[in-house]
Length: 282
Image (cartoon, rainbow, N blue to C red; front, side, top):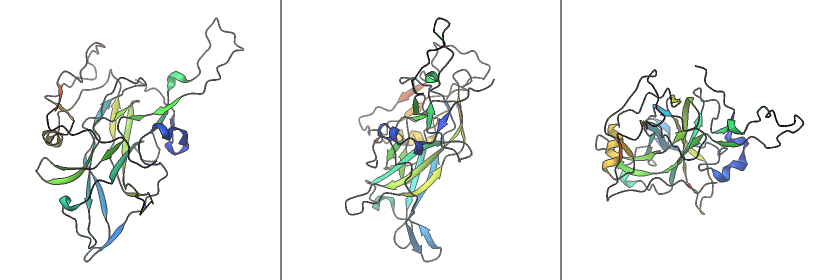
């Protein structure tokens, strides 16, 4: 079956949308800070790496109510070196100014897929009763393709091996359109009055994942051990009791919600609020 054609736009070309979007400015320069290691020479101070890659998702379309989060939720880990180039004890790192922003890209990592034109706003054939001399003057509407909380603050948490690390959790990201994508994650330190400069310190990418239409979606995967570890520490993250996959040929029932029956949220007394959607950088 042929997939519908979507018109994507580069986020950097539409500054007018930035007021309605979270995240770091799209043209923020990448200027890593380096420190000198006694054995390895010049090394980056901040090292961003993937801790959990998204695998798949069901497209959420162009409505504003239906959200189908990436499965499993993307998680990024940060490691910080001291002035001697050695990795610091994570408990000694001041993390309150740390943020990571997520943007959507093509699987080849060369085209921004963060903005898409809503196909419902494209001009179509005029109704039979409408005069052919009447045309629509409305511009096609451009909307975010990656929706949800696209910025995460830093969390000091234990992973599935009980090791303490600095994490950034993207628990509610959804994609409007079907297809293959990657996510680009950019780490920055919120500027201060003493140092007002803003730039990206480190970048990492997710692996390629697939976003399916409702009829072809194979179902959610089992929750990972890392997600379970975060849930046990009070992070608001959806945990699945069991996977309920279905074949591509399986009959789709519009009244059946395959994503909810086996899910539960850890709503404990030690609940930690979801990551802030505002980074302080515009």
